[in-house]
Image (cartoon, rainbow, N blue to C red; front, side):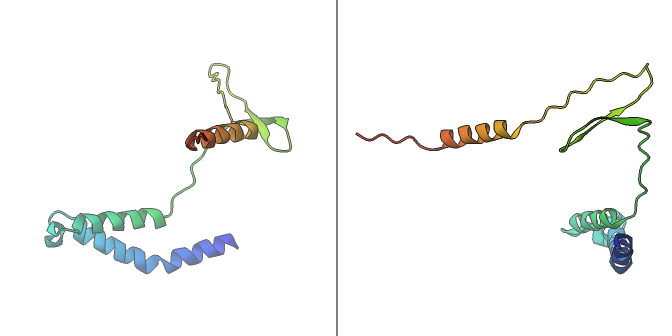
Amino acid sequence: MLYSLFEAQHTALAPWRSLAEFTRGWYGNPFSPLAHLPLSRRMAASSDLFLRLTGRYEKPQWDCGEMEVALDKPFCKLIHFKSSPEIRRKVLLVARSQATTRRCCATRCARSRPSTTYG
């Protein structure tokens, strides 16, 4: 289902991609007479951005090697990537707990409120 929608989108955008290629060529080429107009750089950049966003790219190979699930909890899975002994990297992941986030937000809100004195 998703692949058919992806193909339909790519097919529907084909005429717009051709127009973007044409526009990038006319406004981006320094030898073109249209390249010296005030908005030509923006036209060339927007066409280039459209072409990059709608282009097809190959999925990269990650080469993660072997991996095993070291810890399985209801909220996450800790995955251990096995590597060769000569490449040993240590990674420290730190995440805030919800209680810490609530405390920080409450402190920020308390600091932002003006203090009122009654006298």
